[in-house]
Length: 371
Image 1 (cartoon, helix red, strand yellow):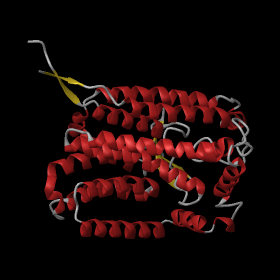
Image 2 (cartoon, helix red, strand yellow; image 1 turned 30 degrees about the vertical axis):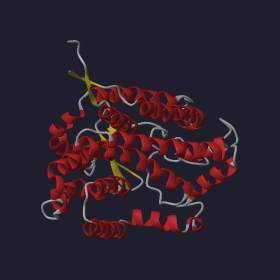
Image 3 (spheres, helix red, strand yellow; image 1 turned 90 degrees about the vertical axis):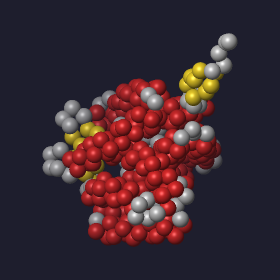
Image 4 (cartoon, one colour; image 1 turned 90 degrees about the horizontal axis):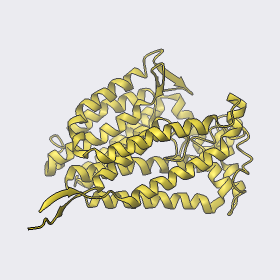
């Protein structure tokens, strides 16, 4: 008998390619107007998007080949470097402040969002920690408490930026992993209540976040001000009806809906493709969730199980938060729609996460050898 690495889950890869292809189509359809008005180049955004996709797919295939167990060695150094990069966003002239939040890091030749790297290493660290603790995770001070103390450092920096959406995304994923590890319900509910309370305090301390909550609760009070994005999103979605206006026929993309190629691209999906295409996108994400969980369930080690589940949750919860913001059931957070929104650090890292999941799906199989 000899051991060889199996094939990756081609169905999971097919789902990723489907979502990426839809993103290319929608960006090609929606971005020329903004490209011409701002950069005198109708293909400005689609060219940049392709560049990000090339880098992203290189990361995907690299991660698909690299044994995911190697990330255990990188967990602590990667988390420390991520924390340093996050802290640098708060430094004047290094951090780029947009709409009241310092989430970007200006490296001169490129701008990056360090939170995308931090999310990955937070999940890797949590997966490694939960594997090492095993059943001891149910013991609060020897189990959950050290994990949360370590992850509290990047979370506090994110709160300072502020980036409440990614706090919810990352810590929500960690909470799900804790629940899967067999955490006691009382401890889990206590942590959940504590996290909610800290979230409320964070919102109250940041007028920027508080204004978004007020806008979410009463969007029609200021339709031409703070609620402008959401109201225009409602109009776009409603205009699509069941069948949609047709590809390229969006009216809201003509500067009426800001960021229609990025955070609010799902609005244009619904305007041009209608309820039918919008629902199809949600079903594809549901299938992505199912397939990612299936890969995790078949993983051969606890680390692989937690890592696959964690990265799948990052991809899917991000999409849920984005769609929830666009349709008005969640506050606007500035989180893009996974694989579909105009690319950047988020697109590149999402494809990399997918590559790691695909590597986990490549289970080692035993092959008979000739006697």
